[in-house]
Length: 357
Image 1 (tube, rainbow, N blue to C red):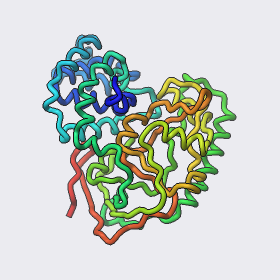
Image 2: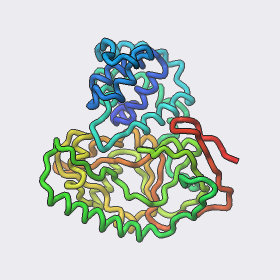
Image 3: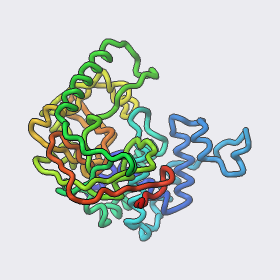
Image 4: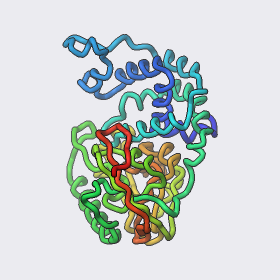
């Protein structure tokens, strides 16, 4: 890697974006990734993974097996020979969406993410990553929060609701809940290889969240719930915004406003990162005393989400459950503006959103 591509290839979501884009550029790369990803997937042999690997003729064969697998070196050679002239903004955006859609923080990484983390594959992705970083869409990937944005209400036009105006109460309740949850988990004795799960989010649920671009923001959602209707609400935000563009921005926030979540996050974040140690996240109730909003840039997301962020020799953190270019509002500093609400619809997950009515 080099300084130009390091931010993109350092993080699992950035690497996955590049891998998804490479698969789109070359069918042979796509087939190799599916096959090698199967071998590396923790769910190897499950119906989901097997179905993805079978040809149409094989799907009715009870004895079907995945085809022969090439090596990571073979895939690296294919990646090195990609024709990068086909890389366009129109291809980068869907690859970004697939990278966000496949983020998992409650289980081990998918085989494709493991594959993209191999040194030989990361190195082979450098030219593609450099091409992506030069695209106009990625030139905006570090921009700060826009003054005018959109909030998203995952309901249709027949069920309108005003913006939430009481974040302080929600943050106070979140603080009580997370501390109580931490005490409950601390009282349990469990092994890291157990099937016990737990909360995995790094940010409080239920706060107003806004995005800078629509309809792109409708598809950049981690762990989506299959919504088919959405209402976008034009807003204007004021006040102090903390920008997260790098891992250092995140760890500085954790260092200044520490909240321990070792007991409640230990098992799930070990599965995601392989690290067994002590964990912190920002105490968002205290952060609200200094900042009105916190914004995670697109490149900040791609370089940090799901990756261990070391605070010091003892403590670390993970950004999880936060979408790229999303602002979370910690105080009552965002207002709906005099602009019509827009209603969007899609037939099913994965299809394009269209304006309704």
